[in-house]
Image 1 (tube, chains in turn green, cyan):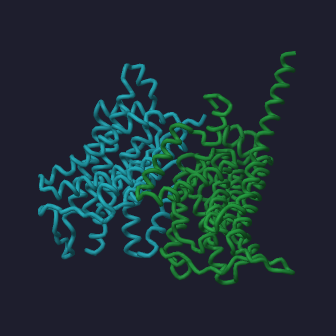
Image 2 (cartoon, chains in turn orange, red):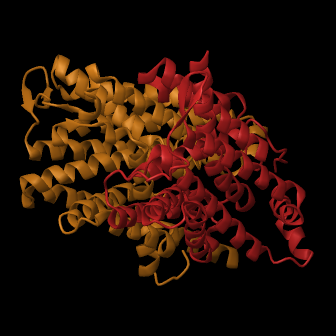
Image 3 (cartoon, chains in turn red, purple):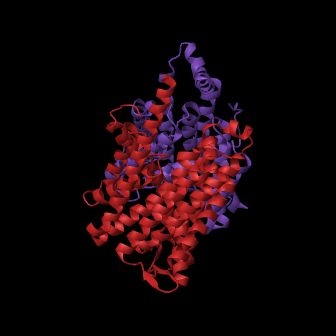
Length: 332
Length: 289
């Protein structure tokens, strides 16, 4: 009897949880759909940047949240794909399909190279190795002036457009850019979600929780991690491909490890392992940066303080923090 | 020939700096399993304090203890709050906390000491050059090598040959066991974190003479120190010394041979080391559970 009641309660709780999640996602979607009608050009570009960076952070969540692999080289995949897209756009024109394709391929290729190096390591060693590999890529981009423009970066990109065979859509306006970014963000979220729910994703969680047991069960740990890295690289690459078109500029800072660290911060502020929290974290961090830097020169101080306070007060991120506050529970 | 001798000395002096910075980080990492990304800030703070001290006209040799003390005091305060709460948390949380702190410190130091490059006014006895096989070589670098070697030996002696060192090493191996012997491990941790931060500051003071001090130096040094510690292997004095030498020589000689790609080559060497020996050059035996 009690067992049945318990099971029933659990099922009910699960369904309200699912309902709440659906409501959350639906709310975000409606919000995203309303933005183009209310926002100025500048705000739209900023929103597009948030969505693009958020997508990259979401891909990082696959590694951190589900694989337990904290990478400090994720900006490299994102920025590398952005550079590849920018260089390709200057050579062949900025067709959206081509850009995203090149971004995905570049992201996966760089993730593969990183994966070969870092495959045997976990925890701290993984952190440092991804950092080293990322900095190697950064150094190459920084010094390869003839292609990447060195410290100056690349400017003067052609307008983003989409060839549909019968017609060509111009995507260079802020509104079109925002919609493109929103579609990309949603697609990335759907892909990441299905990856997490697929056997590969479940196995990835297994390697995070019980590595030894998973290998005893016959799972190839390195292979599972590589798949996660590739999936993550593909999403980060797709996001990166759009990034140069937001500000018509791509610079070496987008590949630097401090940007990787920033992504980790965004992820934690948003909530690790929630996927959609990545966008919230990106919005908060970029918002704070832009908003505060227009008021004071000491904005980095404020940003740092906010990081530290988040870690101290809401270690599981805004999503969980606010959620547990609403449910009236101190402990999540 | 003499050219290479000078380069070897250059590499040695740089390795000394890397080693001193790395040792502070290494001891905290292996003892407390705590990733302290504010170590670069300690380095930069020490550098600024030393530069300020050398410019103030006070006895020059006191600049180094002053830098050590300043960084150690900050380390002490940080250990009390908030580091102590984070020893049992995941690396991710530690990275986040200390990265946030390092961003704060970087901005505070830019505020207090300015954003321009600051170089110390070296005392007469340390400035100038000596001629080694007809090649000029800065005296200051020789001073770093000498000072670093003495300090490293002293540290090794303390850790390896004294009762205090034995206590710290015992804490690394099994903290609970040390507690059952009636020792207050919390206090030990506080002292270790403070001394480690002080070492960071001291290396900053030493390094100021060749690297100067500027915003961003903290990050550069932090990365190098992290690489040294991890490639060397956690919890080993020898490993840190070895990998500091390796990185110092790699960075110096790649700058001689392929200046444009020197960092790429040096980083690639260190990455290769980690791929070959994922647990570090000198690995502690760890039981996998």
